[in-house]
Amino acid sequence: MGALEVGQCWLDVADVFAAGVKRVLLYGPPGTGKTYAGLRLAVTGVAERLVCTEDLTSGEITGTWMPVGNGRWEWREGPAIRAWHHNEVGGRLVIDEVDRASGDALSTLLAVTDTQESARWRNPETGAWVRPGPEFSVVMTTNVEDLHYLPSALRDRFPVAIRIDRPHPSALLTLSEDLRAPAMSASLAEEARRLSLRQFYAFDTLRSSLGSERAASLVFGPEAQSGVLDALAIGSL
Ligand SMILES: Nc1ncnc2c1ncn2[C@@H]1O[C@H](COP(=O)(O)OP(=O)(O)O)[C@@H](O)[C@H]1O
Ligand SMILES: [Mg+2]
Image (tube, rainbow, N blue to C red; front, side, top):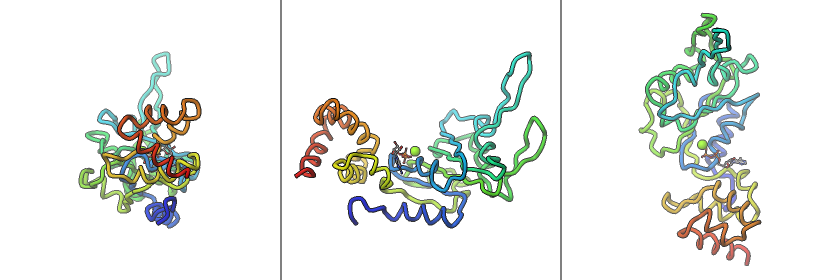
């Protein structure tokens, strides 16, 4: 397969979205474009994003009461419910680093990602029961390699899981041409030697003002620096 070919994983992602699948789990090494894909691919309207941490609360998912002055409180919908209702039909919810969700937040995620037929939630302000719109879709992402580390109930909400093993070709195209092939191969390396797209973006920016050597030492560090500079020198021959 040529260095910049799209890769089966991204073809799978495109086909799954095109087929109308509304619950997709993207997993694998960081920095390949999983979140970007969740926010951009097959999205109608606006995508809402949730980043899971150990401290994520249920209120940050479905909404919280906010003080609005004079002792009054108003209900502010959280990203999941906004995505349920976006444009009346539902939009995209991206749930990042989903392996970190726990406790209350996890049960709330289970509730908001349930199938369209089963999911419902009661608005505490109006008392009304609401459901996700028909176009509501969820992309979950995680850097874990073994899906057994995900809570099984959450895993089960997402029958389609695609391991993303290479950067999206459009992501590589935003790099200067000479960096594309090295960035692709460095991001496919085993974990200890892997370099991320973000590092190459930073290198690309820095080298124009600081020169390649200094930029490489700042971004890639002493161990990886010479490997990258060698790859660039070979590419330019
Ligand atoms: N298709 C794309 N086009 C342009 N830039 C992209 C694309 N996919 C990813 N990127 C960029 O590459 C970097 C890593 O992408 P990200 O989605 O955060 O990776 P991941 O979620 O897999 O860790 C980000 O800076 C992002 O903006
Ligand atoms: Mg991500």
